[in-house]
Image 1 (cartoon, one colour):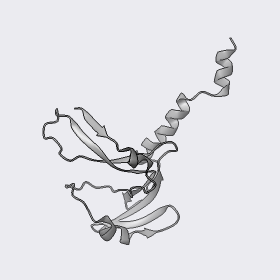
Image 2 (tube, one colour):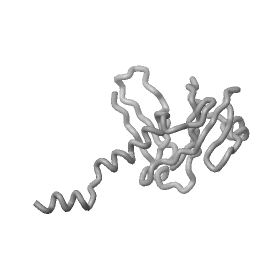
Image 3 (cartoon, helix red, strand yellow):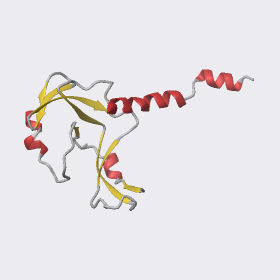
Image 4 (cartoon, helix red, strand yellow):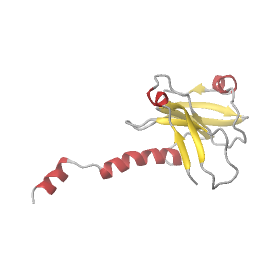
Length: 142
C-alpha cells in the first residue's frame, strides 16, 4: 500500500509547536478532542520532567521526550481512510513538534519502552554510520 505524505513547510519552521501526548490506549474515533479542558488541567508535575495524570480513571505516569537534535516531529491527519488497503492513502501535516509527553499506565516511562528505544536508535545509527578522524587516517594512509 502506498502512502502519500504532504508536508506544509510552515509546520516544520513554525515557532509555535503542536502540544502532543502519547497515551497507552486506542481511541476508536478521530474526532477533535478538547484535551485542554478534559485532560491537561488534571496533570500534576512531579519534577522537571515527570508528571502524573489519569485518563478515564486509569492512573498515568508521563515524561517529556525530546526529539533527537537535528530532527523535527510532524503530526498528520488523514481526511478519508480508504477501506481497501490497496488504495493509496493520503496524509496531510497538521503541525510540528520537538518534544512530546509520553505516558505509561502506573509506571514511569523507561528506556525499555518501545518508543524511547526507537528514538535511541537514531543516535546509535548516526554513531555507526559516522566517520571519525581515525577512520580518515586509516583510509588515507595506505
